[in-house]
Image: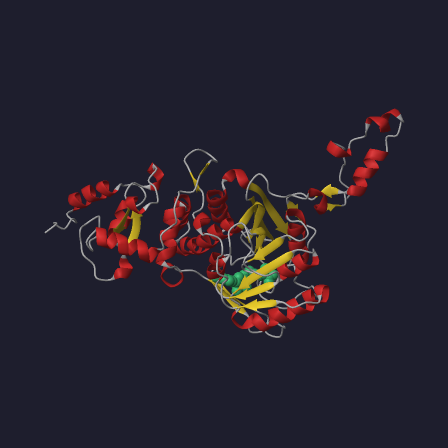
Length: 438
Ligand SMILES: C[S@@+](CC[C@H](N)C(=O)[O-])C[C@H]1O[C@@H](n2cnc3c(N)ncnc32)[C@H](O)[C@@H]1O
């Protein structure tokens, strides 16, 4: 696919609009560090370069979630909708809302990745388990690669549990063809017992020559592939790299990810790029990059940092954009592959363009003569309608409008993912909710 963006672009705004505007399969690596659902807002240190920067990390269904996202998730990724339901019930509604917010964005990131691409999602123990389930639903559990633990030390004064001193990076491949440059992420052996194997074994020629050192020395010199726990990258609490941006991460952390899962010249995307750590790491590694952030008051600081760190390396101009790119692909593969019940398998996309919400609502309202398909009630407010499936997706129902209906919110809750439309009507008759046809 042809990219519809320029290298070294910083997009300013809500990343969903920008992600939706980028052509499919144009990105080699998404490495990103979104909010974690910490239930608070983050502010930059007052006397730092980034003073005034802040971002919001508390979530509610009422304030943060759009009905259209719920429709899209239910339509395209029913398993994601189930993960959200689980989080609503087991953790609470803030987690459900956070996952809905992340879900629509992760679905787009998946669409943007080339088959050789990968995603690294930075999270912590707060939402990590739920995000893992969500990524299993979107990428397929067979494309899960690692849960990387980034461990660090720092002050802590907890009394009732162990100090929480690690973050988690969930690493998923887009397909079996995803790049992985293991030789680019070797680290020195350090005092651990060392056994040779694989490509480091002594060759027959070494043995015949009585040379029992070469293979071992070569292997030692090459170093080992770093394990899935990273203890050698300190956090930024006392580093000169710090610009004071809340939750800023070390460049070396993102450099390792970029080296492992992309090649020089590849395109790296960070849709929650904060003070541009991933982008600077990408520039240093000779990759192309694009970054997106909301940045309230921090835009100037981030521009200053990117210009200082990146322009020195390439000497050219950085592109700043406030409006999303326009897609120049045909848009049809926006319908993502859906998981079937068969473990790990992926159902091919359904043919034909996906109708935008407004068009779908208008078409169904006309067909249903303005009434809810579940209870026959008429509603004047066009915004109340929830689009649902007549035969649920879990029973093989397709996305085509012939299998769609409009429900009022109470009916949609009763129907859930389990009842068919006729099952819902039967249930409404039993409950005395059904309005007569005349
Ligand atoms: C954890 S911080 C990223 C920090 C970054 N890794 C760094 O080293 O600076 C998360 C970022 O996501 C941004 N953000 C949150 N929601 C966003 C959205 N919908 N679109 C774009 N950026 C968003 C926040 O402004 C914040 O800068």
